[in-house]
Length: 224
Image 1: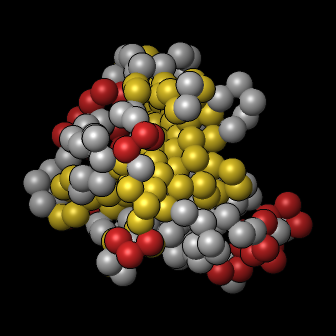
Image 2: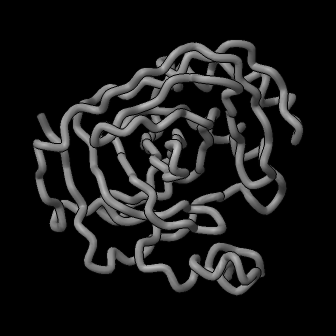
Image 3: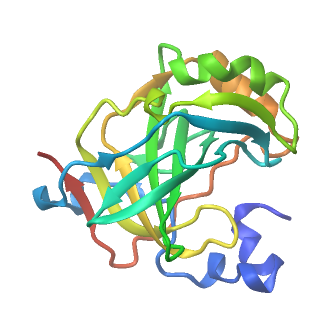
């Protein structure tokens, strides 16, 4: 069994998936929130940069080739590397999964990782997925060029966000990841979640890791 519950036993270097105490995803629970207005607005310095779209087998990923800008957290710049989708969502609200979650993955010069998560419920179609759909349908493992992709086309729509210290949600489940989940839930069409599921390898259609224990961590909410 190669599912998420068993990752920590499959390879020695994946042991953190089983033993880690700062694991992701978590429940975004109102009862455990600490409001923190000093976190400040998310500062983005994104710019259009050539990108590839590729299949990792377990998910579909857009990878920027070059300097696509990034985000600034606590005065530190994190460069945008890639984004990918999970269906259904990994983080839950009120005990419920949503239809989809997008992760924008960044890192800094020390190798620390910062991820921005955007949650989606079923509704109107998502413009960014609409734009790259035909490329997803012809996707390969080595990657297909998307031409220039402007990360600003991935709409945030809210200044409010959740923030906590967690991990990667795929092996090796590395900890110390700064998570920022936008409070606003956006929309995606059923058809779009369907074609994302069809584009991954068989067996990975539901590519969301189960909820992990909070283990005494603080979940912050930034509201201006």
